[in-house]
Length: 279
Image (cartoon, rainbow, N blue to C red; front, side, top):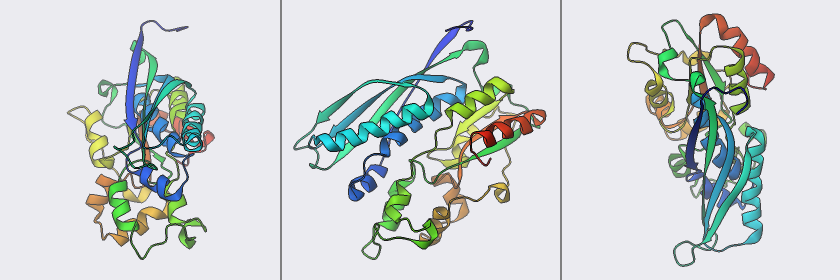
């Protein structure tokens, strides 16, 4: 609480969704925990809150210690990447309700922000610049549609795919959600961030408008999104998905957007680049 005038607690909760089915099919459980943390901490950073702790909840058909250990190792890694503490959790065995190899992972985080520094739509103004931070793939949204298109008899999700640099569909689909917390906190400290939107289900179409004030619109130029992962092109072609639908279901290469005054755009970009984000 050092240096805070009026500390405010902010909380967020989420799960990994049907991406977990890919993890179960691949028998690879060490990354979905990162997704679980990311979905929570990326949400609360949108109002400028620093996550301070996290708890997870695992419902599982049969408690296989090795599987649970993998799941929790991912959660721990997500907490390291976001700078918060994993202080506990719960594992519940649900025989008769879930198949033995089935599980559902969810969690929540609590963060802190000084009330005068809370980010809300009142800061935004016409002329602000929108920065697009790159995603690592689908993150944790759109997997019901992805599974419908990919999990077919013709597709071996374990076979290497040239477009993915030799990785398989399964490995690529399990790429964990980017965690933007440390770079966002650095930007909030160094320059005047007017707004942050975490691009989850609903894509740019739905996640951005709800943080805008009534008298401001946001305009995106698709051509400025740098090198979106090739998996977006392959999925939209496989499903013959129109842009209007794709940009609503998927993040399409943009995992978070920041609104900053025009004179702070270069400084904010520099913070992104130093954090490894080609924004």
